[in-house]
Every structure is written in structure tokens, then in C-alpha cells.
Length: 408
Image 1 (cartoon, one colour):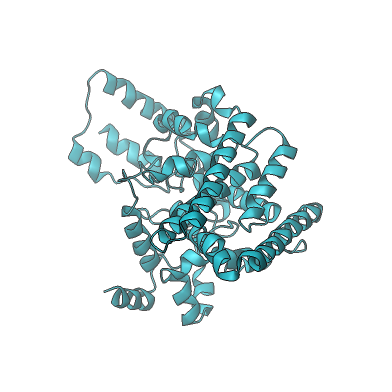
Image 2 (cartoon, rainbow, N blue to C red):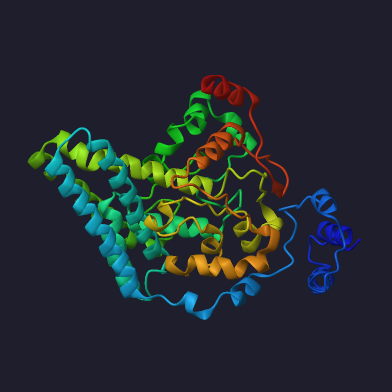
């Protein structure tokens, strides 16, 4: 009986009118459960399907309060130790590849080095959030070195990524892998749709995104006068674009020294593997869950509700290599937490989040299972309705059937 009343209250308390009553009911269920009182069978529990768009019966401050104080502490020496670890591995791989110079080893090198480029990106990403250290200067210096080395304009990306976090789950204001509206989607020609949703092309999208953003959005991460940036941010964008240009010039010089083919093997192909890692991971943190998840606009959106639509993923042996970026829900809600505290912070926050936290499927050593999530999402998640403040992805039957025939 209480389970059914709980579900009804979730549905009718969308504007928080019955927030306190619903919370009291939740606490009552917890206390009675601890006494061994069961109000419903597992079958009845399953019948009351969880609605991920329902207003959560907790506040952001409650999640924050559950996370221990030490999880918020940023240790610059510890952060720098991860930088040192990754840089040593990168140069060791280069030395080994040059020494062996064997076509049997080159494919192994490309995968390993591309993965390390992705790990370096994540550390620069932490600099952008300020979770690397409390020093803005140190964050900027390390962030520029790391991101410029893999052809990412540090400040340009940092600012747009901040916009993504501040508006996660918002159809109208999000920045990263944001759904297209039905109107915009139908205006695209079939070729554009094909390249946007047909694997592997979406996994190579990041360089194009840096240059011209996503469909329906204007501007560039390299242009200080882009719509992405405020006037007081333009000088930072100029600095990052200059650093990016210096890296391109360095690569050109190295190409004249070692030859273009050798540069392609040592840097070019690993760079493309890094891009595929980045697009793969960032897409699956916001798409591809077994249950359709909501997107919001207008008054229905809030920072908390948007953040709760993000998804944690298990990447097997790569979790530690790419600095636990798969623990994404708590990271999105509290990007100030250093990556080395995210697992602990997530563990203590889960009792507060309840069903709003979706436990990631356990991975084997290599997360092959996530390929299925990616393929399924690309086949079915194409656009959202132009109307409504709570919307879900819809499928274009023509594109879905076309992809299905090609995949068979």
C-alpha cells in the first residue's frame, strides 16, 4: 500500500508541493523496513515502474552533505604525480615503438598511445574544472601543456565544457552531444544525418566540433569572438589558440625531421584513437542507457534534474588508466571533486540518490559490452520533440531501417 502511495505522490508532486510529505513517507518506509516489515512483494515493486523524470525527493545539498570533507580536498602533488605517470608512459611507448619499428608492434602502439592521449586529456579536463589544484595559475599552465600537446585549445574547450556542466540535460542550452530538435533534424539532408549517426563517423567528430560546434550551433573554439565566449574571456581564448598553433608548428617541424609517415605512425594515428575514445566516452555518459532518460527545457529543467540524467560506466582495466572518468554522475553534479575521490564520493552518495542512480553494468577487462549501447543509441536516438518541457529521444524510421540493413 505504501509503495503505491509513494508512486502516486511522485507523480503529483512535480512542483514540490508535497515534498515534505513524500520525504516523510520515504523515511517511514526505511524505518519500517529496518524492523523487518515488508509492504510489497518484489513483483509489486517491479509493477511500479520508476519514472526517471519524476522530481527527486532530495536536494543537491543533501548529496553534498553525504560526501566526506576530505573528498573535496585537492592535492596538487598527487595530481602532478598522475601527470608524471602519464607522460613517462607516453615517452616510453614512443621509445619502444622507434626501437622495435615493427609492423607487428605498431597496431599495439597505436591503441596504447591513443589511450594515453585520452588519459592526458582527462587530466587537462580536471585542470579546466579546477579539481586539479586550488591554484588557477597551476591549473592553467598544466592544462595548456597537456591539452595543447593533443591539439585541444585549452581555454576554448574549458569554457564550452563549463557551459555543458552548467546546463547538462537542457535541450536548449546544453553544449555536448545535445539532442537536435525535430525541426532542426528534419532540415538536415540525409548525408548529414548519415554521418552524424552512422558508426564510426560520430566517433571522429571531435575535431569538427572544435572548429564549428554541433548542428544548430554557431561559433568555434578557436575564435575569441565566437558565441561561446563572453568579452572578458576572449583574451584567454587567444592564448589557447596561440598554444595550439605552436603545437601544430612543432608537429610540422617534427615531420620535416622524422618524415611524414613516421610522424603519422607516432602521433597521427594515436591522435585519432584518442578522438575515438573521447567521443565514445562522452557520448555514452549521456546516451545509450537501457531505459530512455529524459531531457528538459523551460521550467522543468534544474541543475539537479539535468545532472541526474548522466550515466556512470564501467570501463574495465581502463578505469584507472583514464582516471575514473566513468564515475560521471557525481562528477557532473560536483566537478570540483578530484578524480581520485570520485569513487568514494559516489559510494556514499548512492543511498541518497536511490533509484536516480543507475548502477553501471559490470565490465570485463575490455568494455566490449558498451559497443552495443553505442550502436543501439545511434540507431534509435535521433531527435526530440519541439514541444514539451520533458522530452525523450525519438527515432527516425527511415534512418533506423537504413542503418539496420547496413549492419546486417
